[in-house]
Length: 213
Image 1 (cartoon, rainbow, N blue to C red):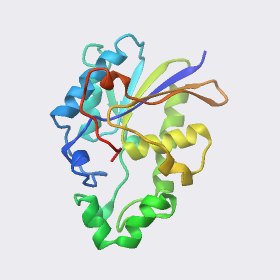
Image 2: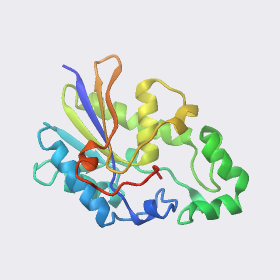
Image 3: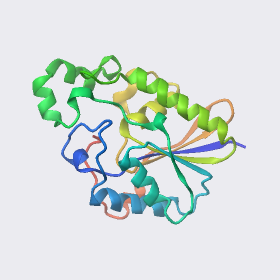
């Protein structure tokens, strides 16, 4: 029996809307983010979920608790799902970073696999940590359905790993707030079922950002 992986990005925060780098800073959901998580709960209502894991940051944990509130499923915080660190850029608007660190900012957007924000992480470092966590948890819950609640960067790295793509393809994936991705692990490889599914929010007329930030 295959293992089903539901990979979910957290709901919107004020810093998403204002294009402020978040990373490991613990910024909570805003009201729209909580409403998005409520719509996600409805989308998951008919799904059997055996285990749930979340980044320990509150925006992911709160999304998970809202989405699974009526299910009685415990949400386990996991350090392997914690967000990418932007170092000195944390708490700064994207436009400010572009002005102060133009070369580094351009590299993050065009060749992020070669970038390291001052005092921050590289994609490779975070990929090794987070894909290792996903592999371990997939083995632990073989044949079950697992829900993972994480972040834009984390989700993109996990998707690249499951699709067997290099980190240079990072800019070509999109992960909107409260999106749902589904994969099946056959025991040998991952099969994609859906990517960046936000139908549960579009159908409800939710406010969505024009870009994933």
